[in-house]
Image (cartoon, rainbow, N blue to C red; front, side, top):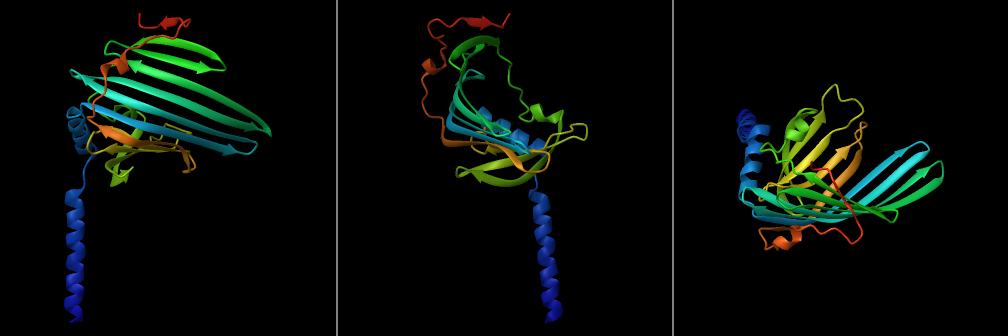
Length: 234
């Protein structure tokens, strides 16, 4: 009986290992699934929150950024709008400095516009739009080694998880873990780690809405009165 139990147990482990091997996905396979999900997306909106904490002897900094993001398909591209307000507090040797700022970013299909406000001063810019690459991992490929982690969930939504660990020539950097929503293909969580392995920046998405109606007027840029737009698109 003992031999039979041992045999069944070993067989079970073997089948479990075989099943895990078969179900494992490569970075390229996950990338294709993200691209396919994005192709089916007509609109996306969410609340965003990003928190950064840095501490070392004689220095600390905490920054909190709260905002919203919206996307609306126009042909083969997406119009985008994001609004963010941030508060940061820096402590250097007991001297505390607090700063507040806000940024509005809008793309209208032809150009990208931004309005920044800090210390009571507003500035605006107009820029060319860079077409998004079909490869969702392009921004990380040149500096990091990519690996698929077990599926997870964020804000109750199923997600693919990718780890981007810095290549050997990228000194002073930690890894980044990115969660991609399985329904929309959009990033819904990102954690950036310090070189010592501790979380440094965490960005999360909540109140996610997919394919809801969003007015195209949300993506029409209007500069505030008295604010000159610096044209960097030429």
